[in-house]
Length: 109
Ligand SMILES: [Cu+2]
Picture 1 (spheres, helix red, strand yellow):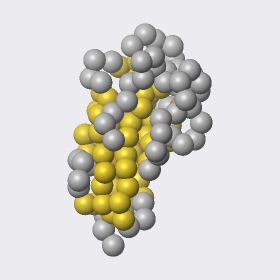
Picture 2 (cartoon, rainbow, N blue to C red):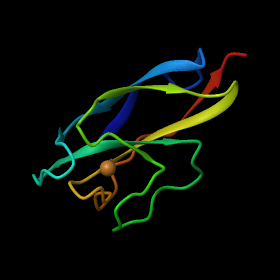
Picture 3 (cartoon, rainbow, N blue to C red):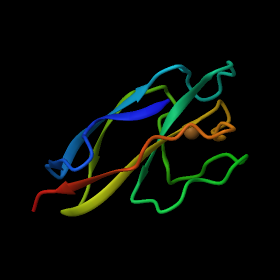
């Protein structure tokens, strides 16, 4: 299961803020490393739909192919959504997809 540790749904944050990724029941492996039950994080910002099944993900989402578990994001003031999806060594979503809940945050003016 993949989830966003921080920020939390409904939070109001500064325009540059840290996003912390959470994963349980699976492991992180950098892109290119083939290992069962692992993957690397991909962050969807303001995306209506999920990446296509069975295909390497493009951009968006943002790739964290070194196995990063957090990042810093800068967004315009207003309302935005964040969602994580795990990808395998080839950046392909797992089947079934390992996707977080989509959270909504507000960036301060
Ligand atoms: Cu990737």
